[in-house]
Image (cartoon, rainbow, N blue to C red; front, side):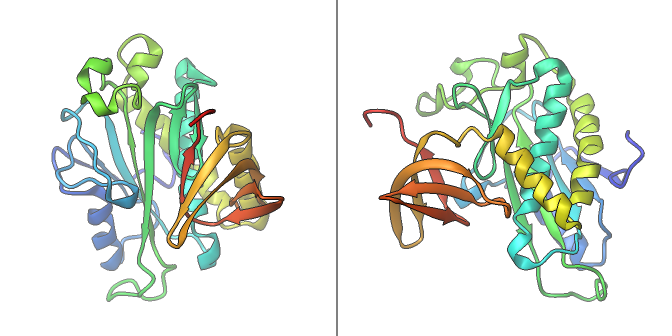
Length: 262
């Protein structure tokens, strides 16, 4: 296990949600750096309430507790830090260039199949036991490591939409080795969250691996949708989309890559 700020790793055979567990621990005063890893989650969830089920022990399911000194407008970069660390760890397996990041929080392969999803949750109200500590951000990530083994493992509606590291590597992947690599890569990424230059570095690194850039996208917002071409990432980590002659900054929203002719 890497000797860094994420050395406190708590393992569970089964738990409802590693994010829920760490949010409860944060409210009780747990410090920055606690990690929860599960073989199976009974109530794991992704963005927009989506769920994902895999055989216990097949994939890497973890959450990390961060307490960065961040303004609320910058807290989304905690998700970026974890996604980039996961991409770093996957590259270290010999899969350099095999995955990129679909803005804002999915790791995908070259054909757009999902390898991992990231979900951040926060609690801005200080609770008993946590007075004086920066507000917590719990970032969860689920990486398809050794499942699915092929499209036949997936429901028909998901075939061609998800892929595992096993499929990309052509053989089994060491889940614990991936965990160690991710936590080692996350230490400098998490440190960047507390520095203006570090936050800009996170945005630039996201730009370098973002598969959304250069594609036509549909952006679904709470008050409607629009389409345009994704042209870049702002210094704050937001998506820039050219639409109807103007560049719009997307702070939050569901982004769909639009295939030609669709």
